[in-house]
Image (cartoon, rainbow, N blue to C red):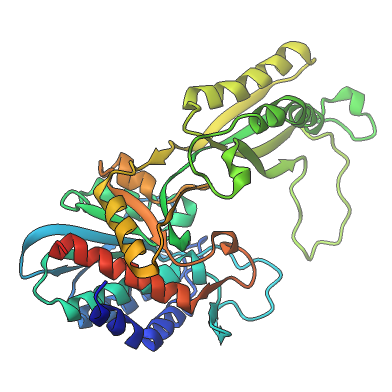
Length: 423
């Protein structure tokens, strides 16, 4: 990396901090999809000021899109002075629910001991800010570059990305793109090549309602679900734990197949908090669970689904009155970019030049928007690279380190230099 470009980014340190704080202070909570227009308008003003042409794109008709909570995205493009390739930085602007356990207001974005705190700090508004600073510094230092730089901030990654990158990919917004860098919080010295697959489903067990004092006259759907959970504990979870992958998934526990039970609902619905009456006495006639099954490149979709169906069908054959329905909610295949892909080798060299050491290669335990770049956009030249500690994502007192953001911005700027100047 040239000393001049590095010094330019160092000079923008305070701007980087302020930009990150401004982004965190816009509470883009998903669900329901709050303040999406506000953050896109903020970025529209910022990027136009840096010479980018911008598009505000609403993902009409996608899950969650409504007049109250429209799914807004922004795509900005800065043309170089000569023809060349297009480098696209994509960040999602939505953040998850705050949750309990915070020791500070999650949307005030204080700077404490070199860390900016707040919901979305590491996942991934710090990465979005770093990509903007990197692009602005590169353009200022090398205004004669060839090709184009794009920066997007997209909706709903935290709920699948269908109102964001998937919508953009379906409408051809990546057809002209050559390289994609997604600044997810994988660390300034690591390149993330892809992610595990995910299969989400809802299982419902059936029963028969009856008076709670005479449960023998009914059929308890919750007890049937208990049998399902016992099968999972005795058979499925041990089998998954024995499977490992050659994907460089971090952390270590995610090198095996995993499944989370997201929710369970059975019997009477919970009453409003101000209701102080007593429950009615009924045998529950249905019980539902939602499962989040993360699977490895060495597994198949048919095998993952078939394994669950096999356990349920076994209960149907062996357990009196047992019946169930299984509904798929979503499916994402594993995605992995080849280590020889141009964006991988370029960022590898940039990390070596900026940090003085070779990067680690990792894969993400959860999915991110590479899945849509890959499957819909048909571009297998995409990585995740950005500042932040992955384990802080979605946690209370989430933070991103300023030094981490500065280093990441330098790597991104140096990658631009290699891709758009050829040096």
